[in-house]
Structures are given as C-alpha cells and as structure tokens.
Image (tube, rainbow, N blue to C red; front, side, top):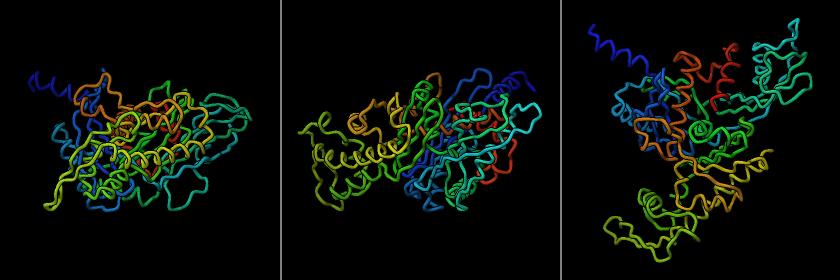
Length: 429
C-alpha cells in the first residue's frame, strides 16, 4: 500500500465517530461528530434537521411519519459529514417520564469488611428492584449518596470499611411502549441504538459548567412539546421532571387568536414574537401576515403578538417553578436557572423568567469552545440536546472502548457493569 494511503488510513483510525438523535415534537435533529483519539479535538461533521410530524408532546404518535423524519435528518447529516450512520444515541422525553427516590441496603460479607465494586453493584441492584409498575422501564439510576454504618454523605464507597451499606438513588423511568417505539423507528432504518438518555440530562452535557452544577442550578429546556427540568447540586443530578407544555402551544395560541395557519403562526412567533412587553416591544411596530386563499393580508402589531405569547410563556415558567418548589433543592440554587431549548430564543425570555423565578437567569448555549467544523450552526439553544447526545456517545466510546452498549430493556441482566457505568456517567456530567 502506498505510504500516502497508509497515512490517510491512520488518520481515519484516530477518529471516533459519534451521532446524537434528538426526537423533538417540532423537529428531528441528527448531529455527527468526530473526536481525535490523541488530541481529543471534537469536530462537528454534520447537522441534519427535519420537520417532526409524528410526535406529540415528546412522544411518538405515528411510527411511519417519525421514521420518515428521522430518515430525512439522517440523510442530511450523512451528506454533510460523508459518514454512513450505523448507530447513535437517542434522547427520550414526554410526560410519561417519572422519577422515584429509592433505597437499598446490603451487608458487607468480605472478611476484612472492605467495600468492593461488587458490593456497590449489589446495593444498586436492591435499589433497582424497588417495586416499579410493570409497564415502565428504568432509564437511569443516579446515586444520591451512600451510607455506611449510619455514616452518610459518602459518594464513592469503594475501599472503605463497613458492615452495612445503604444507597439512596434517583431512578428515572419511562413507559416501555414509548421506549420500544423509539427502537422501532430507528431500527427500521438499519441503525442501531447505543443508548437512550433523558433529554434534559443530555442538554446538561452541552450547556452546564462544573461550577454551576456544584453550586446548584436548575436547567430548564423548553422544546416544542415539553419543558424539561433538571436540578444539579454538589455536582449530582438531584431532580428531573418533564412537563407537557412547550413552544408549540405558543404557536397554537397565535393561530387561534389571529386566525392563521400553523406555518404562518410559527413564522410570526420566530420573526416578530416577544414574551416580555415592558422592555422589548415597540408599541408602534407592525407587520403583515399573508392572507390565505386569496384573502387580504392581515396587519398585526408586535405588541398585540406579545400579548398572545406572554401569558403562555408565563404559564410555562410558572409550572416549572412549581415543580422546582416541590423539590428539596429549591432554596439551594446558587447558580440560579439556565434556560435552553428552541423556545428559550423568544425575545424577552430571560427577562420574563427572571421576573417569574426571582433568581439569576442565564441562556444556555452549547459550549463549542475548542470544537471545529460546523460550530456556528449549533451555537444555538435549539441544538443543546442533540449535541449533548453526541457528546454522551463519545463518552461511551472513551469509557467502554467499544461500540456495544446494551439496550434499556436488557440492562438488568448485566449486573457486573452497573457501578462502572453509573460512575462514568456521573463523572461525565
């Protein structure tokens, strides 16, 4: 083989390829990235976006339409990247997502009473075996703390001595049928799923910084069909919630009040919409909406549009605030609230959120510092989840050294890997 060709192949072998699939209510997004195994440089190779027509409030409602949307996004990403997509990490959301706090207790049987990874696996299995409805599947088991002989506040018990160990975990579950439908849509295209990740957790990969997660922060991801909440404190995921309210309700309100089709309502929302009148809306600003079926165009003031949008956004923020208040961490958010997701781009969203939440607000944009490739395209809150899923896929490669990751349905069978997977997952967050 010629030397030049050998060098090209060597360069290719140094690149780990990863793909994230964000199944949203308003859009399907596929992002292809590569990472140089030596330099760790991440390159954004392809971004495919397609209109989502088979999703409702974050859940698949039509298999064929969703499969077609995924296929379109995949083809665009493949054309841009020059990569044939064979596997990916996919996000899951929807108001079927439920979380529980569970406890497990085991005795330490080793003669020297030193706690091993196997002991941690056993106590986490005890947490997993908590009574959960048969129609649900566990997506994540997130340790909150370990307690050894009544000593609490322990996060890594391996190597410590003790007679009895207890674990407190945050378990995230989803409907088995929703998980299976995701597999059906993706596998119809000949693509395998490496892992399924709760979408707000994926968003956290790309928009939150370590000091925010240590200090305490609430990430609010406002998508088309759902608003997803994740609270971090002391670097650990403490609370997760999915609310079935999102930006498409804003579009629906505009359509109903103004009497225009969805496509025009969405365009008006994006181009002229604001959700905070006092500071951002010029009372005299007007714009025209094309008429339908030969009718005359409609003229609307930006202030009038704001009066439609603001109440719905206030409702979304208020629901999110109410959920945060149900958690024991509402008074421990030193870093305040981070907004992300496509609907957070509405003009005035930060101002309105600050008024509702009464705490510091920051816009969460994917951190692409040091990335190369199509960075300008994803430097947008609408891509937070997709890039986070791709980054998680890279982390799987780094931690596992393989592209084989078991499906959600069979995770329980591989007990010996539970502790390693969870610790790697939490370290990456």
